[in-house]
Image 1: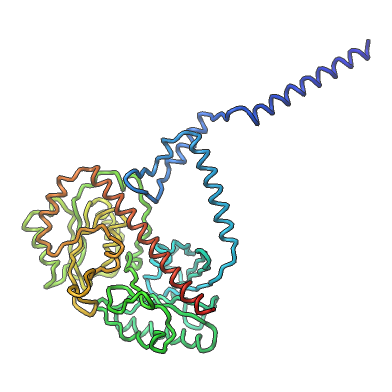
Image 2 (image 1 turned 90 degrees about the vertical axis):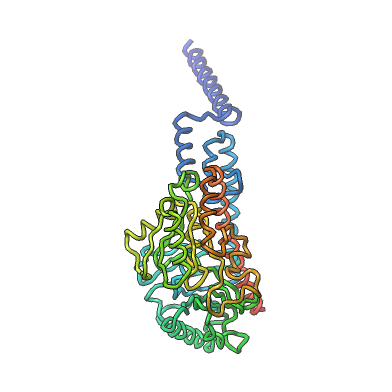
Length: 441
């Protein structure tokens, strides 16, 4: 009897164990996944906490994850896992080209942070030494900048260098020349093999001082990227480079948000800047006063240029861009100016005075795309005018433009600017690889 009861208890335990195993197997392999209400809420908040930076076309919605079902989310996760795996394998591939960028002009930050989207440590712009590294395709790139980057007092970590210089005025040219001479010494001592230069040139395009350093003139600079329109640009060894945003005023990378795209903006247009004597900016201000346009636009002018930014002026300028549908861009010393790129960052359409400025930048009667050849070649969706007397008609049309039409236009210009930076990035890397790697073979 004792043996029978013991045997019975063992049989029951075995049956219970088998039943539990079958139930567990069913839940793991066959039962549809159950999502708790808490998980759904958390997932929705995470998906809606930050919109995508990249928009496709008319159907863009940075929070479309909120409108997708759980199945779509699972598919997206699978797709992201595959992308992460692909990127990881890409980064594990051996780089064919190693390039070090020496940023000795503020436009270097636009190149590194806005175009190449590289990290920069420390983040404080007052640091004496800042650096970053990234890999793009088959190229490893490092970036160094700051007052501590002095000729002969830092480690040269690659045989290929991109030197970022400022040549706007004589004092800057003297500083740039010192760097070019130091670089030439490294070339002669076989410490460097290849050199490219990104140059913030003269606003009147008087850059003859750098010609002796070009390879074609028995110098050592194989590729020159030059800011502003110039008759030298040939897409062989001289390329045009965008002026970009005023990084010397700490203009950041703007992350487009839902409100930036969809909210109604209180101002039709804005202009915050210096009004130079005997310039078209005086005509602009006269048109604004005579037509009473200052009641529709954010206007703040000054008589003298101020290089230093205050907290108040910084906030005022950014608020004006974010709260205006159009940004007025009268010519200064050069037609190309920072506000073009800064307005694009906020989805505010630049209204550009399409007039060639004085100097050696080109002849608009000879070069059909001049001025602003680079931006026009990439199809910039700006409003181009020849005279500020056209402004009242433009603003009257703007008053009759619906919010939905403005939203679509903001999406268009934000997406254009993203694509513009991406194309400039790819062309920059492609040119370095084509030039530097070809010379190695």
